[in-house]
Amino acid sequence: MSQLRSRFLAGKLGETIFKYIGFNIHQSPQGIMLDQQDYVDSLEVPIIEPKHISQKLGSLTSSENTMY
Image 1 (cartoon, rainbow, N blue to C red):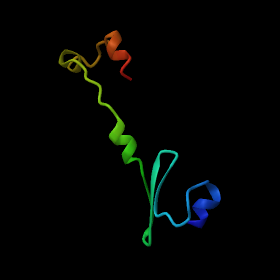
Image 2 (cartoon, helix red, strand yellow):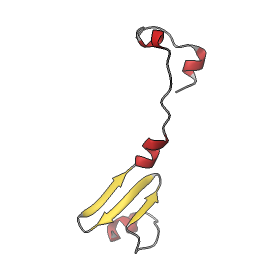
Image 3 (cartoon, one colour):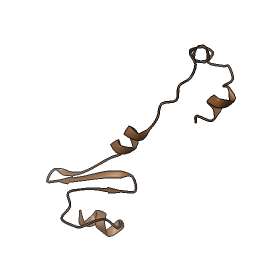
């Protein structure tokens, strides 16, 4: 953990789970694990009309273009 703290500003040294720049950082005796599960959970899946799904080379509508 000291190597990580020397490169990045983080919370209290005693914490074993904290968040930094969007990463969840979990420290355990086995090592350090990073994940972005909170970010993944916050993503919204756009709804595209079924007729457009089958037209892979077709153009999106103006409202579909703004979903991305």
